[in-house]
Image (cartoon, rainbow, N blue to C red; front, side):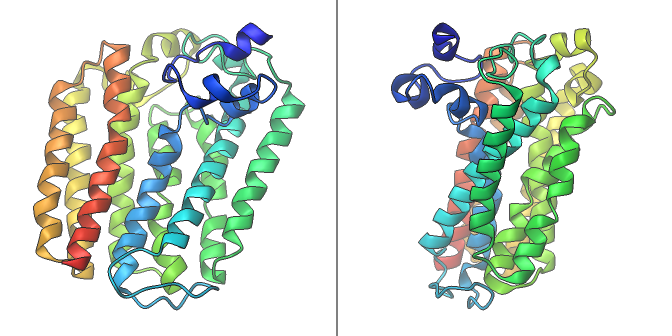
Length: 319
């Protein structure tokens, strides 16, 4: 058990803080929540922060507590709350995913060492962890206005469906995109108590982004997935993935540009998006779909991509 708790899960970075510093008794739970692999909650968080950045010039009327607003800078407290919410809900979602997939995970090389699949923790312990993380997310959610609370709860159905989709369709990434980019709607709703076309366009752009990066990610597992009968866009698209990746990322860039235009961000935003487009082009032309290591590296690079978009929106709002 100790050796399994210390084992490095395939897509975690060597020397991550969980493996280095966490007590052995906590490691399986932290790994169940993917705290050793923070890229997941960053990809969930960035659309939230993009939306908050787009709304930063609006006067906040829809949040329960006083915040700074109308100055182009997102409120630090809201950024922190969304960070906590994203990390906790990502952990809850991962626990739910592992509960649903525990038998499949045991058969796939990359996931075989996940705590539940390798029986480092029990099904009951996993459920308790899921509930605890969901309660943290709920504690964040209830600080928001009624419209945002209802909107947030509306995402739970999509989250519940996602782990089952790879058994049904070759396009489970669509459902992941719907769930992972819900924050693009939430950020604006928390500040204003409403939704506008700009954030709907941002949501669609985020879904296209997820279709791209998660298809790259799925190429790591395509051989094992074929053996166990799991579907993915990586399997469906195969060697046609590259042109589709270009389409997904083009939709992402155009969608973000339209969202910025609809709320009237300044010219610096558009200039900064050239860097974003270049990063996407690098992914499209350089990814090696037959290399697990390169697919993982390109997937992880989307953390930087999210930060670049965030910086572009803020720069266009304050200059």
